[in-house]
Structure formats: structure tokens, C-alpha cells
Length: 355
Image (cartoon, rainbow, N blue to C red; front, side):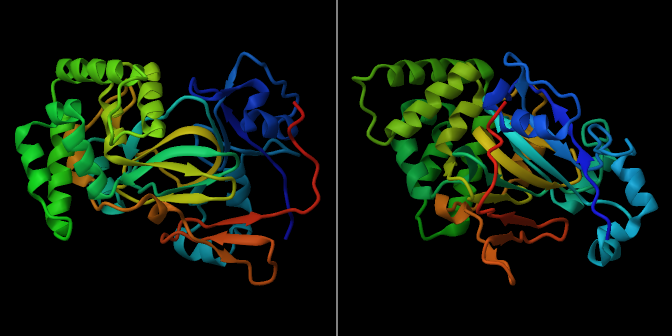
């Protein structure tokens, strides 16, 4: 089968890393014809796929990758052709994150079809959007709800958090036993729902109080370690007074090393905070946002769709298998048919860190 080289689309979103600090810029320099890195410009995403808003093209001819696939459907392989006809079912990206992205979740396939039917102007396609992120550098994010014991400690020890979720939610959190999983999920849901529906003025008031305390190094809040303190202060610098800052008490703070990955299943709340990664996702734009964004937040949809199962941070690290014929290959196979990612360790290579 013929191997063809593609030229990728570049996205200069404001949250991207600047200039040569960005892996996107580094890779784009070797991929995109006549590309020049501008040090004062953010380079956020590099897209490999057929999404109309950023299509790849065949480098030698300028033909759209989607047109090439239509003319050469066998290039997709029998597995893809059997399940997805002549459509590339995924989008493959490089991301370089300098500023936190929104806290968000993605609907499952059935829910995506319902949202698209009821509200096509906000949910523009009927597909699900499972994703995985594979770290290229030290990579930081939030993913899934924390163990309930941690959340209980925050509710009991952080008065500002208690103030925004309200007395009823506080009581439920305090009264729920760790062994009662359904009760735990119900307590988390009630607390998160109260947070998302809290008046913005009250959110801002309590964040101001919390940030003031955390900025004072002499203030000791036993349940908040240095890492969480730094995260909350950083998020407030980027999104002052945003409701998403309180999500740091709800969600696992993930720190991936290069080569580690996390899978972002349907209904799992998550956010990318900093670093460079490979992202692979089903071909969809459906996003339900929770915070750290000025964009539309569909709170009613969000709080009903989320998976409130608490997990340890380590449980969100994605496992892999070794390649059958090559020990230098790691295969990340998520529980969806749309994509898998093979990570190949090349022993001798030329560095691309040469902008």
C-alpha cells in the first residue's frame, strides 16, 4: 500500500504555548511547507484528519485527505471500512497547553444523537467524542471525581467550599458512609449540582476569600497541600472568580509523565491544564462545559450526564500492551472502536527541538 505524507492544520488558540516552546510549532516546522515560527504567537493544536474546520491535505498534490480517502478507500483498512464505511472515524492531534482549557465532558453516542436533534446549534453532530491524551512532556490535567474521603475532608476543612454547595449538601456529604457507593455518588452529584447552580456573585465572593487565605503563606489549611494550593491560585490568575476553580476540590489533579496516557470516556469531567500531548478522539465537536471558560455552560445537561463514580488518580492512568512483534511499541486500546494509538519508541532519532 502506498504511503503518502500529509500536511496538517495548525490552530493558534490563545491558550497555546508560544513560539518554539510549543511542540505544535516544532512539529509544524518540519511538516508544513514554508512555515515560520513566530515567538510571540501561540501554537495550540496540530490536526491530522478530515474535520472540515481543519482538514489535512496530501503534501505532494494539495488534495484534501478526505478526497484522497474517497478515491482510495482501501487505505483505511478492512476494520475501519466494515464499521465506518469510507469515513476516517477519528481526529489525531498534537496539543501544546500553556493556559488551562475548559472543564468539560462529552456525551455518549445515544445522548449525542438526542442533543443534536434537540439543539443542533449547540451540538452540531450526532456522534460521541471519547478521547485519550498521551503525554509528550510532563502533562497536567484534571480527570474524574476524587476519592470521596478526599472530598469529605475538603468539605469539612474548606469553609468557602461549604458555603457554595450549601448546608444540605454539606450534611449529605458528612452523613454518607464510604462503603455506600450509590450514596457517595448521590452526595457528589448533589454537591456538584449546587456548585454549578450557585449565584455567580457568591462564587466570586468565596473565591476571593479562599484565594486571599491561600496567597498568605502563613495560612495553613491542613487538607490543602502545596500542589493544590498552587493549582487554585494559578486557575484564579487565569480565570478570576470562575466557578471552575472550585472543581479542583472535586476532580483528580493528574500529573502524567511522558509516555503516560489517560482515557476520557463519555460523561467523565476533565480539563487539560498544562504541557504537551498527543490527543486522539472520535470525530465530533460535542462538548458540555463546566467552567474555566467564558463560553456557554449547559448546566442542566451537564449535571445529569456526568459519571459521579469516584476513583483514585492512579485508576485514571490508561494501561497499554506491548506490540506483538516489537517491544518498542506500546498499544493503547480504549474501549471504543473509533481509534487506538500505537506509541513507538525510536532508539536513535534526530531531535525536533530545533526551531
